[in-house]
Amino acid sequence: MVTKIDHIGVAVKNLEESLKFYRETLGLDLQGVEIVEEQKVKVAFLPIGDTEIELLESTDPDGPIAKYIDKKGEGVQHIAYRVDDIEMAIADMLSKGVKMIDEKPRYGAGGAKIAFCHPKSTNGVLVELCQRD
Ligand code: ZN
Picture 1 (cartoon, rainbow, N blue to C red):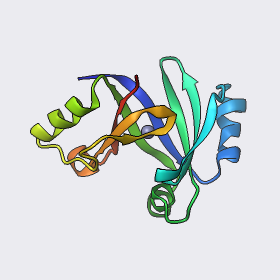
Picture 2 (picture 1 turned 45 degrees about the vertical axis):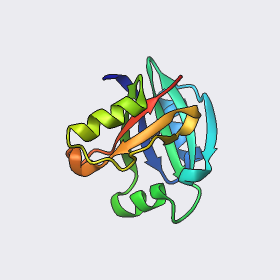
Picture 3 (picture 1 turned 180 degrees about the vertical axis):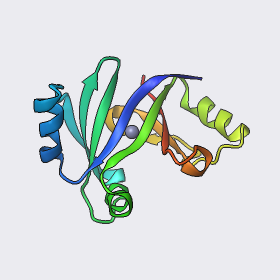
Picture 4 (picture 1 turned 30 degrees about the vertical axis):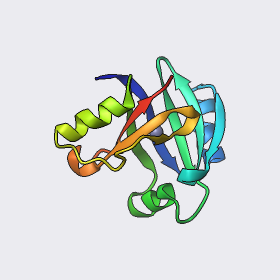
């Protein structure tokens, strides 16, 4: 059902500051930056091989990333798995007893269709399912 790691989401306080490590130290290329209003987040895309790192900075003190950082500090916030068919993947998860945060796909950065699984069902990891057409 899942085909690869689509991306790893990293919560950061300051995108510009964090980009220094990824661009200058690791030498990754910044492919673009997008604001996802619905998630109150600014996302930077840094492809590496067949996957990418997404840096996530909150655009609002009440946004999910701001809350995550308040609670746990900066760091890896979620792991996204690529799926071919998100509707089928959600149905499959539900049928296997996985608690879903999103039972319907929603818009993700980069035009993806995404759905989050509840960390209670995944040993504490926020797992994202991600379909790209
Ligand atoms: Zn993501």
